[in-house]
Image 1 (cartoon, each protein chain N blue to C red):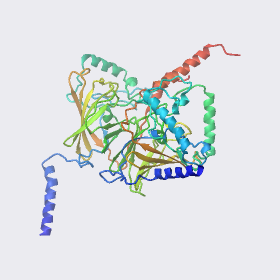
Image 2: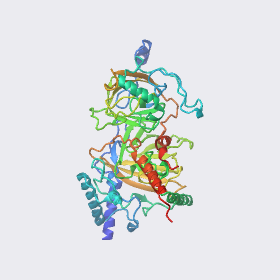
Image 3: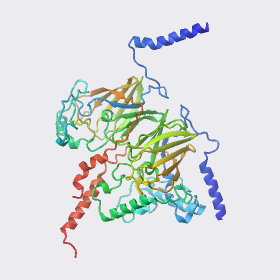
Image 4: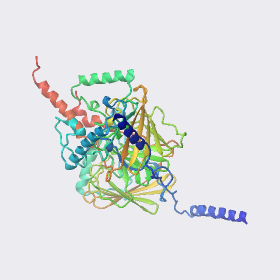
Length: 340
Length: 263
C-alpha cells in the first residue's frame, strides 16, 4: 500500500512538473512566453509551510490524507460561500478571539486541493535548514525582548505588515486568509508583478540569458529588493537582491524569521496550462540559513478574481486602536494600588 | 537601374522624414507592440505643482531647526486661466486646509495621492503598456493604477486612485477617472475635490523625451465650472534610470500615532 501510494504520488509529481500535453504555451505578440493574468496561491490552502515530521521525506499526501484535506477545504469553501465562520483552516487559530467573520467576497479558499505535504520542497525533509549561530542569537534576543514587553510600546513593536509597509516578496505570494492575488503584466523588455495588499509593484527588466545588467549598488536597498529577469525556455527567472535586512520575516505576510540584507531570491515562473503557473523560489541568505531552501507551489487563475485598491495604511485604524488600547490598560494598572 | 531605384527610395525616405520637420508638422511617436503611440518609460514633472496648482511665492518650511531645507519654492501655476473656480463654501474649506496643511495634507500621512496629483509629485513614475492595460507605477507610496483600455467599467467602490478607463484619440491617451473617495488633495496648498470628482486626463508624446499632460477637472459640489491643468512631463534620461522604492509610512508614523507611544 505504501509502495503504491508512493508510486501514485510519483506520477502526480511528474505531472505537476511538466506542462500538459497537447497544449501550446501562449506567447506575447513580441514572442516572449505569456504569463500575464491575475493568479492566486489559493489552491495551496491547507499545505503547511514546513513539512510535519510525520511525512518524513514524502512530498505528496496519500489518497486517505488527501481526502481528509479536501474535506477540510470543502468545509472552508462552503462555509465562506454561506457567510458563516467555519471551524476549519486558518479560522481555527482564531478560536477564543472575539472577531467578526469576513464575508465571502473577502475570504479566499482553494478550488483544487493540493497534494503537497509542505510548501518547502528542498531540502528533502521539507523543513527550513538550520539557522546560523548569528540568526539564532538574534532570534533568541528578539523573543527575550518581546517577553519584556507585555504590550506594544510603539508601532515599531508591530510587524511590517501590521504597519502596512510590506509583506516581502515571498510573504506576498504565500496563501493567507485573503489578498493572495498576483497580477502579472508584460511589455517588451519588462515583466511587472503587482500585489494587492500593500499595492506593491515589482518592475522586472528582462535581460538576454547570461547577460543580466548589474544590480543597484549595495548602498541602495528596498523592501521588495532589486529584481532582474530572464527567460530560460518557457520559464521566467527573476533574481532579486538589495533587500533591507533585519525587519521583514520570510514567511506568509512577512511574519516569521527575519532575513538579512544578504537575502537573494531566485524565482521561477513556468506556465503549465491556461489555468496555472508553477511558482518556485529558492531562498539564499547565508547570514540566516546554513543552506539555501526552495518553496514551490502553483498559482492559478480563478474566474472573476481581480485586484482591487487595498489602501492598507490609509485604513489602518487597528494601529491607533492597538496602541491607544495598550496605553489605556497601562493607565488603569497604574491607577490600582500595587499588589504585594 | 537597381542603383537608381535605391537612391530614389533613399531620397523619398529622406523627404518623408525631413519634410514634416521642415514644415513644423507634429512629431509622430514610435509605436508600442499594439501599434498605438509608445508612451512607456519613466517620467517626472519638473515644476512646483505639488506645492500649489496656482501661482505661489516662496515660503519658509515647517521647521526653523532645518533652516532653508524644507522651504517652499516659488512657482508659476499650472491652472489654465490662473485660478481654481471654487464655490464659496469650498473656498473656505480650502483656506482651512491651507492653514492646517502641515499635518492634514494626505501626503504628510503618506496616504495614496489620487489623480491628478500622482502625476506631478516630485517623484518619478513609470508607464507600462501591456496587452492587459496600461499600468502607471508611481514611486511615491508604491501607488499604482491599471488603466482599463477595454470596454469601460463602472467603479465597483470609491477609492483613493479612482477607476481609470482609457482610450486612444489618435496618438493621445485619454483617461477618464471616476469613483474617487474624495479624501485626496491636489497639492500641499490644500486644493481639493469631493467624491464627485471626474477627471479626464490626456497624455500626448510631443518628442522623444516629453509628454504633454492635461487634466480636465469637474466636481459640481466644489467648483463653479470645469477647469483644467496642463504641464509637460519629462523623461528620466539617465542611462540606468529605474523606478526606486519610496515607502513613506515609516516617516509618517510619529505624526499619526506618536500620541499613543509609551512615554
